[in-house]
Image 1 (cartoon, one colour):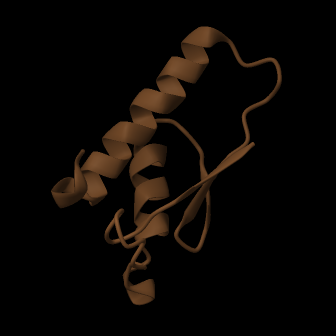
Image 2: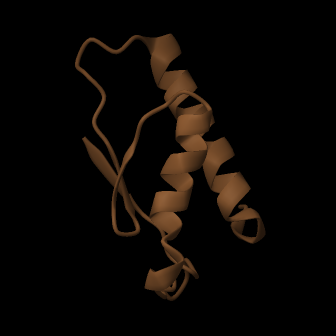
Length: 77
């Protein structure tokens, strides 16, 4: 299990505007791509099963990146 905290600025760890529901927007973008994630505010929770395959891990990572790029395009690194 892993939690990924979304922040407005990585260097200062400044929080995103809570009202924007950024975490929720990211999980909706992931769901449109067939992957179900869970937000806890602006923390994305990934809890893959122990039986996950390497191909499924790659899919999870790719979809997460695509969803983040869709919702936070200005924050690409």
